[in-house]
Image 1 (cartoon, helix red, strand yellow):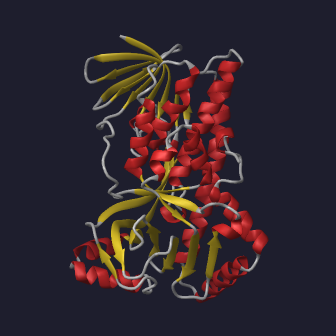
Image 2 (cartoon, rainbow, N blue to C red):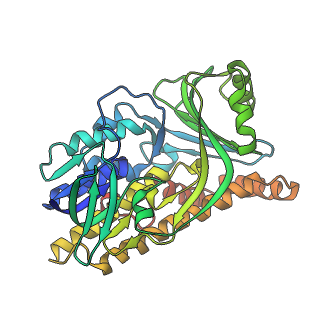
Image 3 (spheres, rainbow, N blue to C red):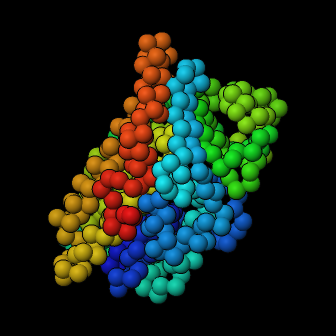
Amino acid sequence: MQNTDITIVGAGSAGLTLALLLAPLNLNVVLLEQGNAPEITDAKYQRVSALNLASKRLLVHLGAWSSIEKTAAAYQDMQVWDSDSFAKIAFNAKAERVEALGWICDNEQIRQALYQQLKSHANVSCQFNCSINSLVQSDREVLINYNQQQLLLSRLVVGADGIHSLVRKTAQLPQVHRHYNQQALVATIKTEQPHQATARQIFLPGGPLALLPLPDPHLCSIVWSVPAADTAAKLALAETDFNHALTAASQSILGVLTLQTPLRNFELQMRYASQWLNQRIVLVADAAHSVHPLAGQGMNLGLMDVAALAQLIEQQLIAGKDITEQRMLRQYERWRKAEAQSLIVAMEAFNRAFSNKQPLLKLIRAVGMTGVDKAPWLKQKIMAAALGNSGDLPQLAKL
C-alpha cells in the first residue's frame, strides 16, 4: 500500500498544471490518469483552446509557455457581430496596450509541454492507464483502489477528471446542468483570404460560429454551435455542400471556406457542481463546471481553479497548518465558485439574447453592442476581464 499527500485524478491540462504547482512544495503527489501519457507529436489542432494573458503568466512561471508558444497562434484582433442586425464590436491588442488578445493553442501541445516539465520532479509520481475502482473516505485519509489490486492512501484527493468526473460521482457531489440544445461542430478549415491574426465570431440564429486563427495564415479552427435537431443533417452533407453552408454562415468574411479535417461534434451543456468539496475530496476545472464555448474561457477558468487551490495549499504549509483543513478548502470553494458562477451567468445571458429572434430584442441588442463598441472605457473593462487582467485572480496569474 502506498501513502501520499495529494492524489490528482486526471492528467488533462488542469491536473498537470496543479501537479507542477505542487511539485516545489515538498509534498508527495500522485497523478492518476486513465489514458496514455502525453507523447511528443506535431500539433494537429483537433481540439484547441484560447488562452488569455492570465493563463500565459501562469504557464510562463511553470516553464511550459516557451514550448506551447511554438505551435500557438497569437491573435491581435477580435471581431464579433450579429448575422442579421447591425450589432458589432471589435477589439484590438494595440488599443488595449497588450502583446496579444490571446493565443489559440492545441490542447495536446499544452499537455505535452506541462508533462515534460513535470517529469523532472521526483516527488510527483505519474501513473497512466489507470482504472479507479473505488474511493473510500475516513477521518484521516482517502483509500483509493485502482487497477483492481493497487491501494493508495491519500490525505487529499483532487478531481481533475473532466465533465464526466468519476471523482465527483463517487464523492456524491451534486451537479446541476442545462442542455443548450446545441452541438458544436469542430474542424480545421482552409480560408480563401488570410485570417490576419483575427479571431472572429458570428452570432447566427441557431448559435455562434467561431473562426479561430491558426499559425498558418490560411487555416482556422471552427467551432460552430448548431441546434441539436440540425446536427445530423449538417454531418450528413457532402463535403462540397458543407463548405458552401459554412461559407454562407460566415458571410464569406474570409472568402470560400473548405474543410481540411473531418468534422467532429460535441454536445453542449452547462454543468455546475453545486458542491465542490466533500471532506478530503475537492473538484477543479471541468469536473466542477463547464460553460458554453462562445467566450472561449473554459480552459482559462480551469487553470485559475488549480492556481487558486495550489496558492492556498502553499499558504497552509507556510503557516504550518494541515493541507486538508476544511476552512481552507471552503475558502477555495467559495472563491472559485463565485468566479465560475459569474461566467456561467454571463454566457447564459449572451447565448439567450443572441438566440432570440424577436425584432424588438434584436434591435435592443444591436443598439447595445454598437454602443459598447463606441464606449472605450466600457470596452476596456470588458476586455480586461477577458484578458485575465481583472477579477479575483490567483497571485501567479496577476500582472
